[in-house]
Amino acid sequence: MTNSLSELRSTIVQCDLRWEDPNENCHRIDALLGDLSHNQTDLIILPEMFATGFTMNSREMAQHAHESEVIQWMQQQAKKRRCVVTGSVAVKEDNHYFNRMVWAKPDGAITYYDKRHLFRMAGEHERYAMGHERVVVELKGFRILLTVCYDLRFPVWLRQQPLADQPFEYDLLICVANWPKPRAHPWRILLQARAIENLSYVIGVNRVGSDAKGNDYSGDSMLVDFKGQLICDHPAGHAFVETHTISLEQLSAFRETFPAWQDADDFRIVL
Image (tube, rainbow, N blue to C red; front, side):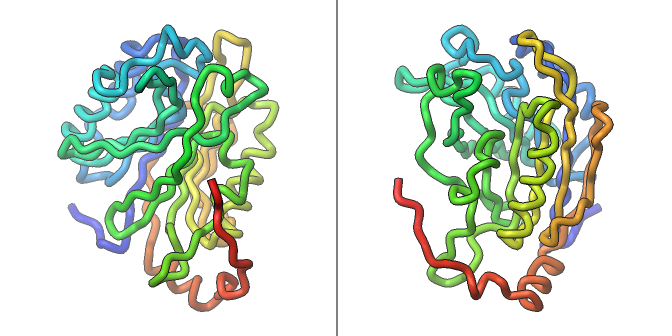
């Protein structure tokens, strides 16, 4: 079975994570995915730091970017299932540590985004280096902006940056997260706000369960359309794997009938 070039099937993986145990987490996720393949999905999205939980033990847990067994596992999953696999991992590169969102393709190719906004309330800014580049990837005709957790709170960083030949930089924003339950309300509102203001689909993938620091996670993974309406919403806090299809044609039609982008303020991000 194939899907239209104007449609994208995205699989949300909302799961519990075992603290600082990459082998066990990769094993569990592989089991959760079962026989899922390109016949059912184009893209598998895992939570932030899916291999370790949101650890600040970067020196002990980060694997070298070019030798990371977790990234190799993502590449193997992408090849095995013949679809893209994405999620964030702790990596070391050039004596720096990054919370890196990896985009692994079936042919083994890797693209990545290093988290820009580091969560200082947990000391992330002291244990990881800041990323400096926004990253947009392409899949099945969709342009996709990669983001990680705390990035969601900063609308300027996520704002559409019009290109020379088109008014929209991306069609889908993906945010992978370890976003604790006490702040679930902002998470849900911000996902919808980013979709509405950018006339874009938004997918937020969060974990469930508890970590070694005593943080509880309710999940609340969501797929939001360009009107802020919920296509996928699981507020109950249970693990699940679910695939949904989004339409580039529907998005383009709404952008034409409701061209709010034409009245947007002109600005550029200066790093």
